[in-house]
Amino acid sequence: MTIWRLITLISMCSWISVSAAGAEVAAQHQPDKFYVIYDSSNSMWGALSDESRKYESGRKALSAFLSQDFEGRQIAFRAYGHREKTDCRDSELIVPFTDSTNAKDKISDAVARIRPTGKTPISFSLQEALKDFGESSGDILLVSDGIETCESDPCDLVRAWQASNVNIRVHVVGVGLSDYQREAMACIADASGGKYFDADSEERFAEALIGAGSAIAAPKPKPEEVETAQGYELRIVANDESGRSYVVAGTLSQEGSESVEVRSHRRNVLKGPGDYTIQVGPVLADNTTYEPVTKKFRVEEPGATTVEVTVQAPAIVSAQFLEEGAEHPGALVTAFVNDVEAFRFRAFDEALARPGAYEFRTEPNKDNELTQAGTLVAGEHTELLFELTKTINFFIVFRLPNGEIIRRNSTLMRGGETVYQVHGQNGGWARPGTYEVSSPDPMLPLPPTTVDIRNDGGTITLPLDAGFVEVSYAPSDDSYLSTADRAFIEPVDRNGSRSFIRPGDEIALTPGAYDVIPQEAAGYFEPQQITVENGQTHAVLFEPKPLGRVIITYAPSDQYKTDPDRAFVEALDGQDLKKGFVRPGAPLKLLPGRYKVNGWRAAGTIPAQEFTVTPHETVNVVLRPTVP
Image (cartoon, rainbow, N blue to C red; front, side, top):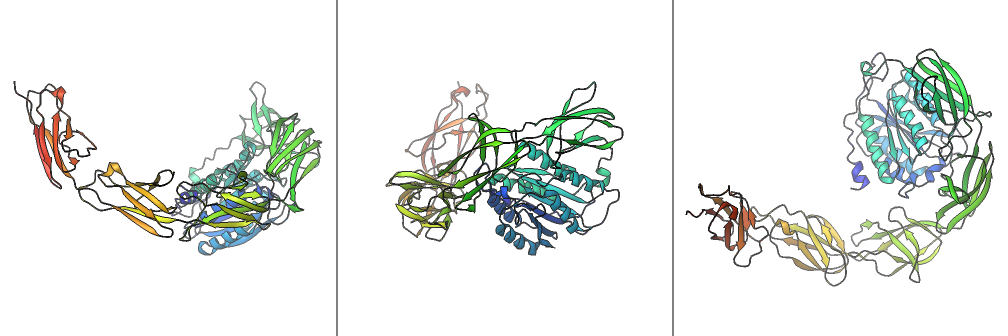
């Protein structure tokens, strides 16, 4: 199933106004508003696990998601990180609240237009969204590929919303996140009463939006359904001496009890009042903690206890990629120490690391396997600069004679040697020049073709000679053994694999001779050989051979050694017999001609009987045991 067909399964037919989670008095609202906050920070240029670009996968998934029926909801769209590289207030309401019919196209246009640029100001964007909601209730869909990068904690912000009875849930789609990033982003959803969803591939992006759509459509819990008991919890706020905030992790201990793991940007449960000790440090890119610090604190009252700690600043490293002076999306950067991998980080991320000497390696494409040495210093930010050899991002698609565009993988070659691989959906990168294109497909091969990869890239469309075949089965009341729901096609005069086709579908084939093979289990048919011509459609109709029926029973008798529950049929005129085993009383469809039926030997001595099958007629055969 393609992800776009998968997305169409989303059902949003039950948008209703509901009470706020945690509110003491239910308020009446118009249909809840729906607000999209979309990450367009620089790291959205990065790739997901399937090599698709995050911003491209997000654009496709969100545009398809917005094609659903929102039934009366007003929709708004805000993007952040799309204009300024270092501005922590770069968050713009691009589409104010408007009816869903008008909002969808505007949002799709905005997503297609914006390009990843800057930082990740999640808290500021949520604060601005709250202003846009005014007194209204609703849901926010936050799509982000990283945690807050502007020295504030959005999880604390939405906790404050809940304490103030703000009637807004935040559902989070985390795009290609690490474990600790996932935990921090899930905290936002949990604290607001929303749901968190992972998106680490183009397909998972679509699945995440399906889940988010269902969560948004689900009613909020009524006040009486919300647990009101107030427990004890710990919130950790960590900064260095300069005021920069960090995600920290470590241990929590209390005298007489075993220590437990704690982390900022999440809810840490405490057992109750008493004296506690935490030992925490910044979480580094290798998922270890840096220079943990110890702090004691006392808990006396239920609720959240906030502990502020001052931590040692680790080293910070990021990478910039340039191609002929212009910014390039780059690729994953891996840091090595003595040729052993130490940590990884994405282009444009700020990775926290231990001070020391490293070798940094990255490979945006096969023409750019880049290496750079660097020494990281505690408390300092080192920006690596990788300069790339010029390559072009391009796509190759194929046009059939009917105008249909198909996408499939292809290879660029020179002198018979492979130079580049080109992905059908994500395209490829290559140096400008002339190449031979190979795109093997046994049923629809590409003839020898050359292409010019030019400086402006874009999409190269190559024509494919093809004809089309449609298969159908003639209607019949009694001549099918089962439903005919498939057929097969094989080339006659060249090597090629068998292709599968459903009745009513159309398959494209390179011109030539083919055997079209019906579904054998569905009945008795004659295979057909056809000649496919370029641009022409060939209709293949299979008509089942007429069948008759036989019903075999056993006469009542006390002479059976065991209850006869089967019989066996033989063809006497060379007919094709697909099934010779039959249960008593069950109709068996057969081709016309003479047959013999043998009884079950274990039941006793039962003489065989011959019978003749006539098209569209039923023969009844009664088997009787031999009486001693």
